[in-house]
Length: 138
Image (cartoon, rainbow, N blue to C red; front, side):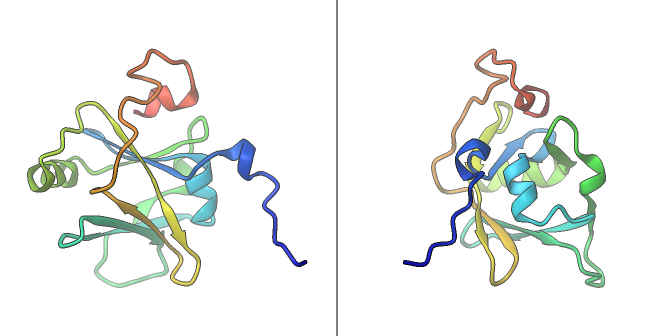
């Protein structure tokens, strides 16, 4: 038998991407899946209500967000309030209480895909009064 085990998968958890009125936050697992790039780009498929995030590789005329330099307590948050407002207007979702989604990493394209139509894990540590590192970023 030939397996390719990830020995840190259980302790690291899922690749969470959290949406709030302040922007989009990424936990250490999602950061790692993206390869901890210096910059990222964020795309949106409006028809399928899916966000795509990938490492920036010099694509012209696309806004790149600083990424690896923004790590704080294992999380990275990018500010994109206007996009969040737009997302709220399209979906009817309210991000005043943060919503956490599990991203799926597509190794072939190098894109972390987050479906906003799926179930979120509403009310992360901040809403529950927790003290995890996540609290500051939700």
